[in-house]
Length: 286
Ligand code: DCS
Image (tube, rainbow, N blue to C red; front, side):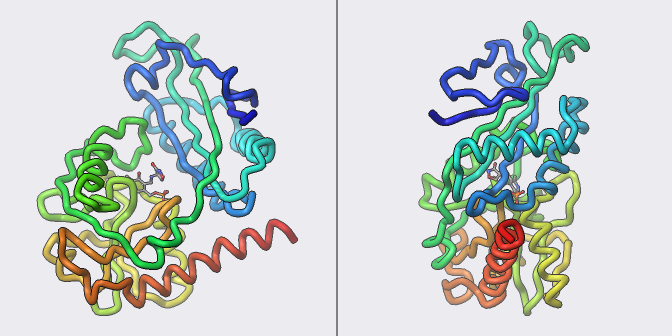
């Protein structure tokens, strides 16, 4: 039986029960993380935990465990479920309390849940690239918080899917922010640009890895907002996320990007990214 985590208990999935008045269920009042597991090894776990604590703090929820304790729990869950290539989903809500917009009192305890699943790398899409459309960014102004409230993201992703696209690239008044569930980048004249890590985007962990890889390998990388016009005229476009890795966008709004094939710099970053998680795996098994 597959196991899940509820607070500090690792139990059978069917034994898990969440109160109908949980504020995550009622209001989306909580935060979450998705962490990649490669060959049983957590990738960039520290960075994800860091962001989890930071998101929780920004909405005034205290994570009921110290970081090391939480890390120990999720490692145990991964082990018990014998996850090979997959992901860990973890969320924290403000807890269960009679429905009221006002935060409940101190006796209401935050509820932490987590589960794992097997997820294959999207190798075919990584190889050939994907299509994207452009959509208005109708989200709130605290996109830096990894909040459970994802309705605008869902609407954008659904519209993309209905039009045969993998992702929706969002913009505010003509400035590209990010994807519905990813960060977005352009390559123009050998230089990469992505929106700075402000309140208008989620500072993706994959984005941070890409920034680091660019720095190490002397690839020009600028955190600077770019326009829809720049997007539509870019030599290369790619998006990144925990599950999509470095994903080439080869078609935008029905038009081919460059020659319609993944670009050279995108390919280079894909190679560097694979080397990165391979070295983490190796370091772990040594
Ligand atoms: N921006 C948004 C809005 C996201 O939802 C995500 C990831 C990212 C950027 C990229 O962040 P990471 O590189 O840290 O993954 N969204 C997660 C999700 O909801 N499913 O998978 C990843």
